[in-house]
Image (cartoon, rainbow, N blue to C red):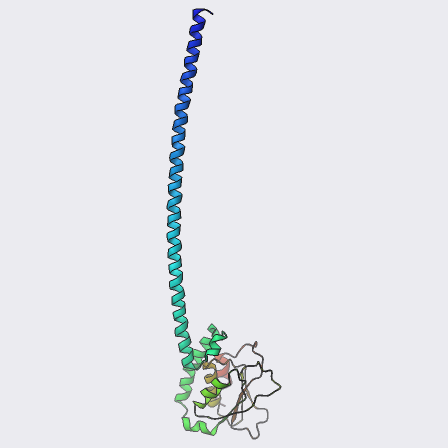
Length: 235
């Protein structure tokens, strides 16, 4: 091999070494960039997890506060409904839906108007007979006696299923519409969903009687306040 050939080989080797050095430098730089990027991603992930944890803690705190507020509102609601005559058993069985509550509040307002126009002693001439089931007999008797009516309780019709709730009012030909309305509104105010408000068919001997009992199963929609008012207009 001549001197010129050896020189060419050395130059080629130098070029290769330089290329390797350049590659290694670039590889180290790329590696550092990758490490920096990975570190940044790790920091971002850690920050995101920390933020998410704080948000979860905040949401849990808000949830607990909301639950406490709802519980407080339910306590206030139940206290108000008990003042209107609702029993705890009614509240426990979920009778306090929004429609029933709105009806109870409207009935309470209209009831006050009826009471302002009708003297208590006059109610003693009206007999109220209760044929309610045990499920709500106590609240029916209590509310109607509180109005000053002569209230008597009788055994429920054995032909009517025992799980029927109080939902009907029947009345005689001499019962003033204002008394029928007062009894109906009092029951709705106390959480009783009325489904029937009817005059006796042949009221001989029961002309001045209001009868409270059951007629329909519980799954029938109750009468609205408008229906009650319409059916108790002065004759």
